[in-house]
Length: 295
Length: 304
Image 1: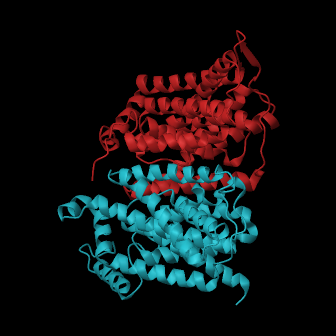
Image 2: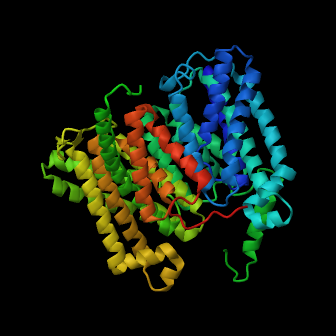
Image 3: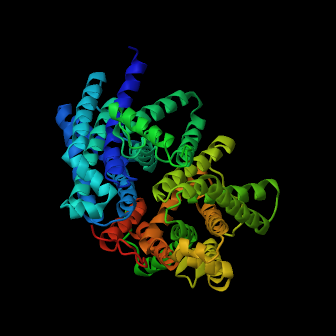
């Protein structure tokens, strides 16, 4: 396998971990976020400082990056997620930008805006793929279990969910914390892959990208998110030679998807036998509709 | 580094100077923030393509001044018209099909981010991303205030222009029939449409107003910081100002902008110019923690 292919697979795995986190919070729990790149930055810098400066082994450094991101998510989530509305979305813009600015002004500790070089190369193909498999296994177990149903209940009807005895604020915060952990781990892996990180890599554009991939893949569909991520990552790779048009095309795709198919490529379906069954049912329903025409 | 070793009279001068700078910057933010709030009050989403309108206005002004040799009044007028038209076009192309299909404002939000990326990169692709300085259209001669402070004429002019344009907006909203329709739609868009308001025309008008105000802000920002495709990114501060004042409230947007402009300039003058951006987001987080609906916001967030 060529080094280029290996690199693409590593990038895909890292992006997959990050978008799974965002999909959990935006797609499954219905909390819109514009600052998840901030959690990635926390994970990346924590792991980079621990490995490069204090020569930690990379696994505890990655986990520490994830945990610190989760802690920050908890601190910002408690006051804002108790309120219904877009308050977390707005706070997340501020949070993402504030984290970036703090890193830029961190002096010798974060090495400022010029970036943090000299990170040991701990993310190879095996590490990236193994992390992805472990994180995906945990995520699919989570969303298919009791917690996943609770998250969806908070998204679809929080009044009904609270009447059923769910502490909806608690579940919303839990969802955000888990998603912060995923993004922190993704950021830590990214640092070990690129060997160099700088605050500008985690700006609002990156956060937008994470959220728009989730929307593109389908809100409430984990496999749709992963599919959307693969498509977007590969499209941007294909357009790399004409990089000045790349962002233009990316923006246009975003608008066109929203105009033509706002529910994303997968809607709320997951891959598997259930999807085909549901699609079949839908067409059957169309066929026998009362007016006798396709709806 | 902080400058504390200056004499007392001088530091008072700096204070006055920074307050006037802050008011001037805040007034430019206000022109942009009002557009955010106006659109939010009617369609209930934050139009992140707003920064794009500002850049379009700035570039039209630049090219009319440079290539056609016109005066600032003609250039300004054309750039206001152009940015307003671009705002209407954006709404018709990207937002109208979505709002006719669904009530979920999330889709509008994402489409607006897409549009902001598109507008920014159209400029990058066609005329390049280099920094351009506008010709000297607005005098920047220093004015001495009785020997204590020195302020730039530019700051006074931008303050004055913001006051004039915001007063015109207020007159339109209060005195005209369409202003009444906009206020009705801000209260409830559906009821306004039942009362016979042409909703599509009203939304186009709102976007036109937002675009023209953004363009005024854009020209002043371009003079202050030079012109480049990513200049629209600065509107995030105006957005923060709109949130601090209460999204959807026009007086709130103005007050929030002034607070933010003053905070930014006083931080730059007395603490450190590197911290001025951080102060903006510090204010945002504090507002959301203490009073999430903003200073003038009406909707109290419901507790889960």
